[in-house]
Amino acid sequence: MFGPRLDGGNGTTLRPPTREDYDLFGRWQLMPEVTRFWGPRYGTQTPAEIEERMKKDGESQTAFLWSIAYQDETVGFTGVFGIDWVSRDAETGIFIGRHDLYGKGIASEAVRLRMAYIWNELGLHRTHNWIALPNRGSWRANQKSGYAQIGTYPRSWYRSGEWVDEWLGEAFPHTFPNEKLPPPWRDESSRGK
Ligand SMILES: CC(C)(COP(=O)(O)OP(=O)(O)OC[C@H]1O[C@@H](n2cnc3c(N)ncnc32)[C@H](O)[C@@H]1OP(=O)(O)O)[C@@H](O)C(=O)NCCC(=O)NCCS
Image (cartoon, rainbow, N blue to C red; front, side, top):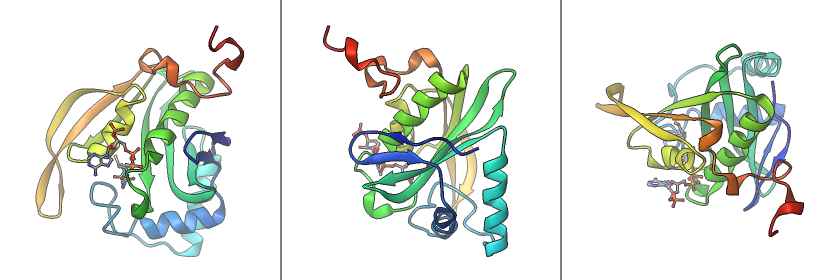
């Protein structure tokens, strides 16, 4: 499924992806600047395959996917995947394809919106995310919205001639920082009382 529009601060919005967004996703996933710690860096992306990918994502009953927009322009995607509706556990992920925009707080804001939706609309019990340990930007953005490291997987994967350890993290509804709850879940009328 595609997640609904969620407006955050600093010009960051989550919104359902368009067909044009899927073209961008495919192109970004082949770029060395953005795939240092993510993705296979290969694959075919014919128009038919992109159509099929989008159809599958839109119909999925075990995933929610959003485009990340910054100042109304699509810059990446995030989502919650492989939802186990019985144990209410799932994996989360994030990808910003515009490397010229790194370090502006876009991922932090996208993760905040995503996690608020997961806890307040989907009713999940736990989420997890395995992240390359040197990819501080990714685990730090997750940490700020309630993720904590539960372990390290040494030499988990091989990339660019070296073994990379993974940061194993998990989050729960009660680890989300209440003061960061965005509207519409935050009751604005009770603030400041
Ligand atoms: C990792 C990624 C999501 C970070 O996005 P971003 O918008 O640059 O992140 P933010 O600006 O919100 O920064 C989040 C935190 O990490 C820190 N950070 C960001 N990039 C960093 C870097 N390269 N090195 C160290 N710290 C970094 C920021 O200072 C911030 O911490 P702070 O608030 O305590 O100061 C983005 O670089 C990306 O999508 N990379 C390519 C794909 C990828 O690796 N996805 C994740 C796979 S698990």
